[in-house]
Image 1 (spheres, rainbow, N blue to C red):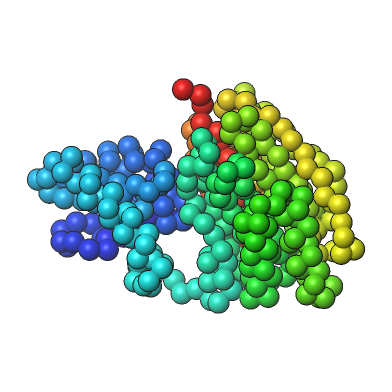
Image 2 (cartoon, helix red, strand yellow; image 1 turned 90 degrees about the vertical axis):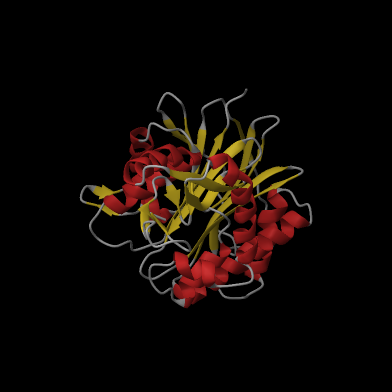
Length: 338
């Protein structure tokens, strides 16, 4: 997610371009002006048109001596074509990779939705930084009639077992959503699915949330996961606490889950993260909630994408050691009212 690679075209165009504000294989709107300025300096006279799809750019169209206006429709169609083609060929995904992926990493990446999107009058930015022994971290979101669903989870274990357990939990969540379950019912569905596997060491921590943009209400159920953080425009960061609950798959088959609610104000950001971020070793101890808060304060842009990327970069730079655990984050940033 740090460079754009030339997939097609004349060789006099750069083979690689540094991509500011990228998350995974996608570009954020915030980074386009910087990228445009860099291209104007390196390639005077080159027209640049992002290939936009639901608030994210999948790549760029570059052309010489062609007005950008003539490329807009082509870029729109190209974005849709690239997204559709990804389900039928490995060529595009293979071009995006810098190194080979093991099966556990392949499982994990297959679970993730687009890293950047617009969702219910708000922006979404998410990322998973895999550790050496890939785990079962994932995030998910979708916009339904009852609001925008957002979730993050961490499956126990490492490698393909954790990836498989994570995929089971995500499938259970999606089944519950599509059966029009509420948050509590969705948590129970995931719990029963893991419980039925009859493996005592199998469990998943998770936060399941829903955002109703019309009322600006954020609701969540926490199942043994690090609590969400609420960042205010004045720089304060508070923990969204809730009634303690065990991870999904533990205790009795029938459990009671309770949601918590919070009204979001203009300029608020909600951060969901895994313990691979908060427990990241640093020379001073652990990255912790304070590390997340400092990362957000260091990023002047309040978009979801900029926030997620700032946290991601701070986690990587917190220690010279490689990650010991997957580091997942997803940020919701409601758009200000018109």
